[in-house]
Length: 224
Image (tube, rainbow, N blue to C red):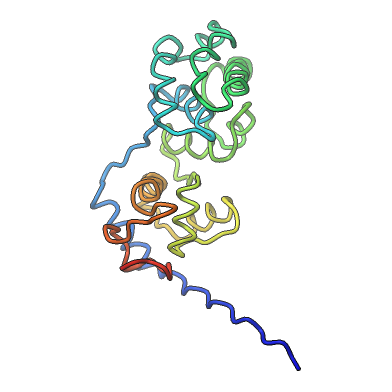
């Protein structure tokens, strides 16, 4: 006798371009100029803040970088502080020893190879110690206005849960988002999605009742 085959849940219907446009129109109406929550003074301090934010909260990074950036807002000043002093400034952040080493190394490389300036291509930023694709995307978007999509845990969750841009890894979600989001929204898109995941589409208990896109969302367990 043949074994019964478990029925797979049907894949949710992909979002239409009109639905994606509507979703981001609502995000824009609710928050026309979304801002990243990492505090910074210039492209260099943004780069450092993003490198420090790996496996740490923005609020925790900001507490450490306010006094650090007050005395070191350029690669030259950071190198002058030295690794031990940088480590003291950031010791409240997770993985602070390795991060202090990376901040000094990336500062040295910026001076040696890029004239002390943050480079403007993804490949060049990714070549810096401690900087990966997400770091590059954040810096390119926030410092230079590029239409990049930085996928953190919040964006990854929103992309998959809503069905807007499902993917098995962050790169798949990133490329999926870039494919479906209209260009007019791309400058602020990753901020809207991060904020949505951080404050509304929560990991454990999403706040579907106050979600501005709850009627568009494909999540089968949504509570509205």
